[in-house]
Image (cartoon, rainbow, N blue to C red):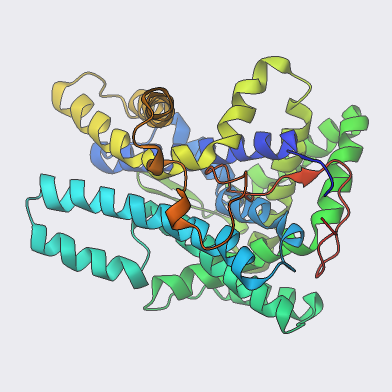
Length: 373
């Protein structure tokens, strides 16, 4: 088997992604309670076209590394892996929010049952990764060509479907980006490599992209509201799709450029452990926001949003270090042996918002066949 290593720029991009996601929830959650708008609302407004698409596109980048594995091994890494963490943290969140704080155990049991078929809260992302992994494997096994899948998936995304089922709605909204990440992985890796060697061109391209995104998001018709962003021209379906893909690529390029700055290694570590933050950030977010508003500790929407962001990211990281130190509770962030359906593999920790497998030093991709191990 070829010796494998991680791709650090991917972790950098994932670090940026998790910060943007937590920032969105921090700003909108705070704005909903204060009724105001802070400076983070404008940052999130700018990132609205690509914030979640980038997460899904990165998650598809390494799919060709595992897509041709036997069903049991593939399902263990790309389906069971995500559903395990979804189940653990959905139970924790519902137990705390409904069972303990609301003192409604019957409602908690009902919502736990519903969470099996309808993803709960912010955990919908992890749930959908399992669904996407299953769908991609079936499409590959049935030999459906990419030139059929991607246009159909793009049309679903642009249709802006609002179905009674949240799974259907989110599948239509984001599967295209996951599959684009899978199919376009060779191109993405080549672009990131090229921009790392041509800094001036990379910075110029990023400046053009950022200005274009800003002008289209904040064009006439936009509105920055306490709990959401209403985009201007960027909301037009075809344009929105293009901005989403370009924004996702831009964050990948930025991730590659940030590797040149050694003091940004903390961001790489955060991206490597992005699932640690994602599954646990809402609990400290809600508690700190409620405490700050009740005590008057911070009342300004912008300042409080930023404080909530910092607390929401650092608290899960501290919990992770505590769990590693004491040796108890590792099931919160690491999938134990009993939760696997295939043979034990080294990569079982939840650094898998990209994949549980690492990237070969010289990656070679095909759309429907993974390189030999």
